Image (cartoon, rainbow, N blue to C red; front, top):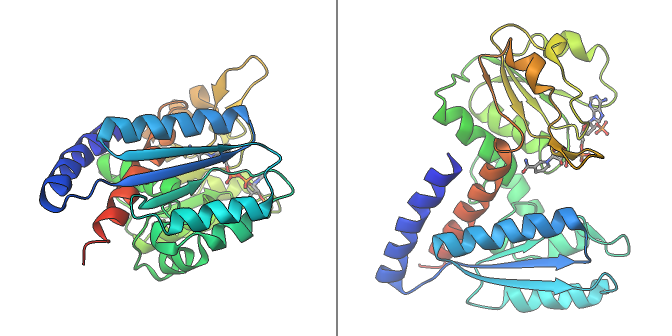
Amino acid sequence: MSQKVKDNLKKETEKLIKDSGITPGLAVVIVGDDPASRVYVNSKKKACAEIGYYSEEHALPASTTEEELLNLVEKLNNDDKIHGILVQLPLPKHINEETIINAINPKKDVDAFHPVNVGKIMIGNFDFLPCTPAGVMELLDDANIELNGKNAVVIGRSNIVGKPQSMLLLHKNATVTICHSRTQNLKEITKTADILVVAVGRAEMIDGDYIKEGAVVIDVGMNRLENKKLVGDVHFESCEKKASYITPVPGGVGPMTIATLMKNTFTAAKNTIK
Ligand code: NDP
């Protein structure tokens, strides 16, 4: 599915370059040497190369100050070659993530984390899709899963996954319940779900006992076990037996997140033509 999105973007990019001379450009900023962040940044650069985008990597040492990072963001805001700016999170503790996100020009905020873009997602009239939640919606759409009037349960309320995911499901007329660490009787709630989206960050927490027969189960989680194996938040084997549709980890939502980022970069480049 993510390959299909990237193939389409490749064709659209060739056309954009031919018609307007604009090559979509993405700047990826990484601070420090977190191994997981390094893997994500490499995947994003690879996707840019595959589609034919211009990309720049800015790898900064962990000792970078907030001011130095703000200066770089400002430079990228004013660089015409760059249509999308992605600052890989998490940032080192001495840098305030909110300050950095707020400094990115909303028109180049391809992660859709800036308050302006978050507000637009809430209203339902947005330029940029929040990458992971939108990737989930694309998977649901591709599998022809009906959302209208269905019970959707989202476990997790983070700003990057749970909250925007709930909004996108609501915009598609699902009846949405959001669960979190203080939720009482989680199992009773998840068993009402026609569609269950799990974004908790706890390896294989949701097993077959949490889902009803025929449920659609979307696993956003990515957890690295001590033996280095990558697993989701869902116990795949026990849920697979009951679910009508289930996404695997690795290979389900993760690649769709990157595909949406690529779509957003294309949109940002196209929006500069006025
Ligand atoms: P956060 O840690 O920001 O949020 C986790 C959420 O889960 C919180 O809202 C928390 O509740 C809730 N939670 C924690 N424990 C429980 C529990 N026992 N019962 C119910 N709810 C609980 O994580 P993210 O949203 O950033 O990420 C979630 C997962 O998705 C992670 O595994 C992450 O690696 C993965 N991820 C995958 C991406 C992809 O591309 N596939 C992209 C982004 C993230 P509370 O708010 O009360 O603390």
